[in-house]
Image (tube, rainbow, N blue to C red):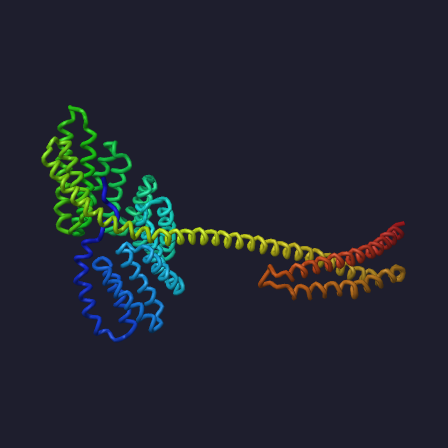
Length: 506
């Protein structure tokens, strides 16, 4: 039995009260509206772990001030504080609405860091609802938003937030009992946290990994021993950090692990090992109980009392087993009353969460449609560019043929001086060629150049470009016919020259 996740931050409540009081005292001295709104928003957010009702009052005060001065960032921060306090009161539908409002403004301001935080907040609201029912539904929504937040963290290179979201995603898979993926994300978070010496994240992920080994295969002693190794490392680090809640949770978890090992020793020959592990379990569980009483952590007391009762039963100590069971029942009744109030809030929340989940599906489909449009546009652009390249290639070939013909004509002109009689005989042919070159070649070339100037290079997909390409192709074919006619006439000249040379030989 592990109570590792979603424990209230009691330590923060005790340490934060003095700090919040100091901020409240400093508030009257702040004269600049934006500075005052910023401080009010901070006070509102901090109150979510102390007194959410007071936090909501400050949140509404900050919202009114920011709206008055039309300060968008202040409005978004006020919504964020109101969301945090509403979530603390289990008014999750209201919290979700505030977080979405904050998200919209931060996206408009292009504030990636705040956008990432809001996606994470929304994911936490969904995950908190899984115990209400339809866990797969809420897990999927939480995973969706945490994954978006993680992607933004990679984009802005925020290593600490990457570690946090990797751990959060591990928690989601852990709750789904997908231990393989959960352990994978926890180890990723642990590796990155160790690399950057994020001790708080190192400790939390060590505890998470210990919980995985306890949950994954509670009937295997090897897994439970691994859980002990990671659990002890976790406890030592929480001692170093002075984190009382972390110590309470993970000391209790270590007691649960030893209790699990003790249950495996069922043979009479293993009585000594069984009792040894029971003693360790009782020691750690009692330590957790004492610390839970000091900080008022009812969930810790509830679960430790239950496990202590079970441990003493296995040990054969009926009196202590019964005493701890009575305390377990008392705490359980108290927690159940609170749970009933939360369930009422959850009933009001379900419809809002259902609507938001539909929004997720719609957004996903829209993204897929946009990607498909972009892909089709890229294909169209490639086809246009390929068409242009082919036409330019044809033009190069035609022009080269034309230039070659011009060179041949120059050579013929030199030969004409030596063969006046032959020139006279071929005068008509040469006149035709000259006419074709000056009239029928120049016209198509001018047309091609004009069409090329009209081509829309900035938007290859412009429908007019297709007509231009068709026009260029048509003119090019006509030019090719003209050049072919020139070549045919030249062949007549070559034929005459060949005949002249044969006559000379003879």
